[in-house]
Image (cartoon, rainbow, N blue to C red):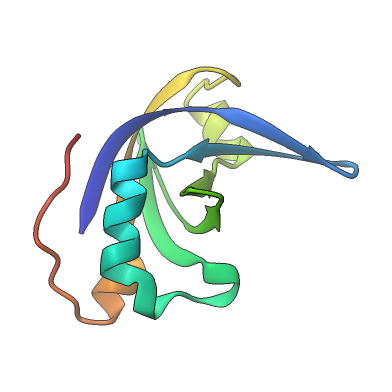
Length: 110
């Protein structure tokens, strides 16, 4: 199952580390929770494949307050010339949902 959406890059600073994320739009997070809730992994994470521009990679999304957050690693930000505060277009595919053999209701495009 694929989701396409735009989201703003934001920075989370904790201890001496800095992490960069996007927050999934509420309607995307709600649909993911509905579809994949039973197959969550540690910390409620779900494995995903993400496409930003010409870069494709696998990572996990993590629940956070009322949505999921998606980490955007430095290599992707560098390759795609992304900056904090910039709005990014993403395609996200639920790997765990496919691995579980679930057939989702289709493609979601807000």
